[in-house]
Image (cartoon, rainbow, N blue to C red):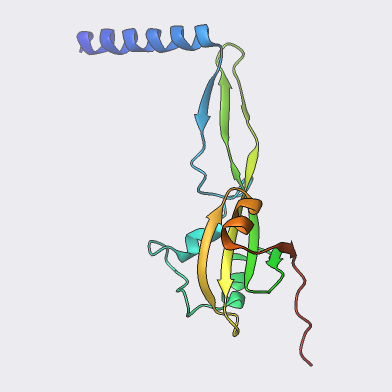
Length: 151
């Protein structure tokens, strides 16, 4: 028992010494939740591990909106693609000497979904940069305008 305590104390002192020399250390975030909330990322609903996965070519855009409650931010000029923008946490910086930690902020992600004529989702991909998505897909994105309601 004594030997285990000595080894743990030695490792603890080494970690404290390294952190004191560095001053601070960064703990990266998992990027699995929307920044500032406990809600899952919108793109996780297309993965098989979720309890209510959305199936490509079966789920409509309205199904996605009801499930995620995320607004649509961008659309392609042709109306073939829609984009949901969301934020993910970067991580936390810890300053052990001052007993302080703070969030390093968040960074944007763009979930691009392809639609067919009946507004069924045909494809999806998450990008870090909307311009990169536009270049890769060969489209131009503009702010989303909801279609008029039918009477």
